[in-house]
Amino acid sequence: MLDTNDVFEAMLCVAYRGAGMSSNLTADQIAAADIDGDGSVDSTDVYYILYYVALQGAGKNPTWDFVLGRK
Image (tube, rainbow, N blue to C red; front, side, top):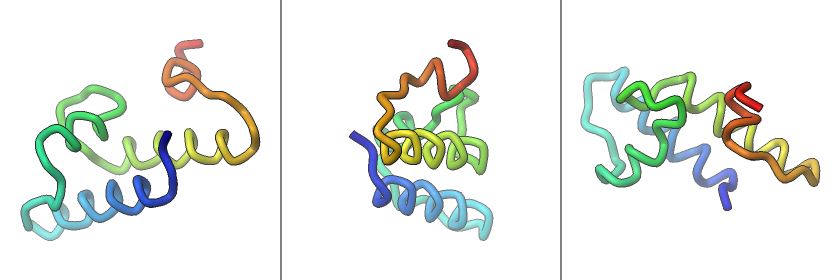
């Protein structure tokens, strides 16, 4: 289950990469955070993670297909 800590870690990864620094995530964490499967963790992935966590907080049971608009 994702939570706000996961959102923070993904945002921190994107910020580090934007500043030219290495990410604080392991290779497995980066693969898991690459929600759209484009090969990198970026602001789009952070958006999807935020959306997923918001739906969970609203009592929904989202799927990644729903979050990605693939219903």
